[in-house]
Amino acid sequence: MPLPVPSIILLLLVIFSTISCTHSKEARLSVFPKKLRYTFDGEKLHYKFADLGIEIFFFEQTLDHFTYTPGSYKKFRQRYAVNSKYWEGGKTNAPILAYLGAESSLDSELSVLGFLKDNAPHFKALMVYIEHRFYGETMPFGSAEETLKNAKTLGYLNAAQALADYAAILLHIKETYSAKHSPVIVIGGSYGGMLAAWFKLKYPHIALGALASSAPLLYFEDTLPKHGYFYIVTKVFKETSQKCHNKIRKSWDEIDRIAAKPNGLSILSKKFKLCNPLNDTIELKSYLSNIYAGTAQYNNNPYSVASLCEAINTSPPNTKSDLLDQIFAGVVASGGNISCYGMDQITNDARAWTWQSCSEMVMPIGYEKEDTMFQPKPFNMSSFTKNCESQYGVSPRPHWVTAYFGSQDVKLIFRRFGNNIIFSNGLLDPYSVGGVLEDISDTVIAITTRDGSHCQDIVLKSKEDPEWLVEQREKEVKIIDSWISTYQKDLNISS
Image (cartoon, rainbow, N blue to C red; front, top):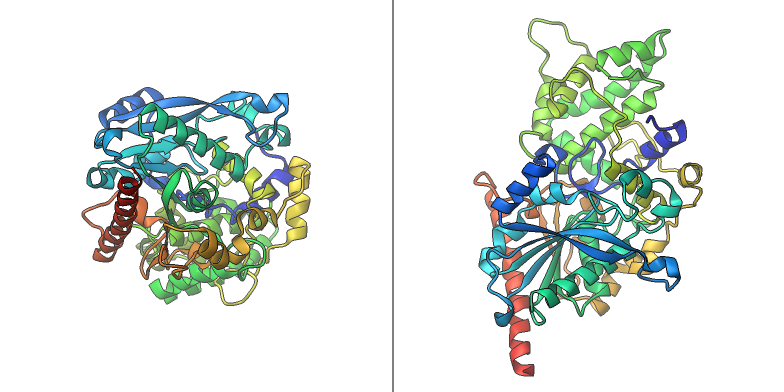
């Protein structure tokens, strides 16, 4: 069903507030690019997971952990996965590596996430993957249509409830597997990285440590320049190809020039092979901006800034290529050569994240200055609020995250109350401007890599991985080793 106009406007407003380690058409807070996800039908998926030693379970989860009204005790089935292939067992207090799911399906995350699988043999660890409420198959009100229907149901979708879900499942697993003293290391990327760090703060009796990859904890309220994300996107493109950067920067005015013609929008729709005709230039500009931002955010072959720029810089052979034809060549390089390109394909994951962006995960990202390759488009809180109210009938709470998790003074909060946390960031990741880039204490450690992209350290390792990435992962493992070693010594002393 097509979205009403306010919904489309809202999605464009929150499009750069989404954070995922998955690469989609919008710059989402996701661990990995969408193009790198494996896709399975349900039956084949379970066979594949079984081949990998992964068991799928459903936990009877409480709908509302924080009230005691009759309705709050409603239960829903929350999906999680366990792989005990390398686990040494509870008798030896072998550790548990727990991945805290974010704003995507567990299927996607299991397919590409590598840190647990790659390091479980070393740690002799139990691997646990938990799906976030309201994503994938974890729909508290049955169907996705019913669960994502309106604010009445979506009101139960927030970070605090998700963390409480994870706590309940991890305690259940420790009891089920007789792993009372097995230390838990929580791992997450992007939004999930924030959840991992916050889980360590809120549930220190459950988690011994946390690896928070590409977690933009600081990108709330007025803690950062709103254009910082797009400044990094621009920097990556400019350093890759000044020529490509210049063409993209000039293309916005060219879009406006053609759109001003009597049949301008029709011309643009055909030039970019759009599945549906344009209603205005905002749609096209947002679509292109998302491609550039997402490519810079993940920047991995074959979907890299270099490959996109090569397509833009290289005119089709034996034809005269104007500027927008060259820009379209970049679209093809990013999304493949298909019959038409859709800009309004909104998934259930995107619908759920739009709610989170509208309620508590308000990340005021815009491009306000002339130091980016984009036309100025400041984040406007008034317009954002108006559209959220139009869509859901509720107003955003932009101050809630900083109030509840203490994000406005991260150094003070984590120095006083946090320990055993790794914040990892690749400095080519636009979200790194909102990351913790310096050590906060001896046990709250920042690892930065000059050439790293979004969540690169926690995806599956490859023979093509650069040496700096191999070293980064080895450093993370060494730090986690030290946490577990200290814990085991303390456990032996106390017993």
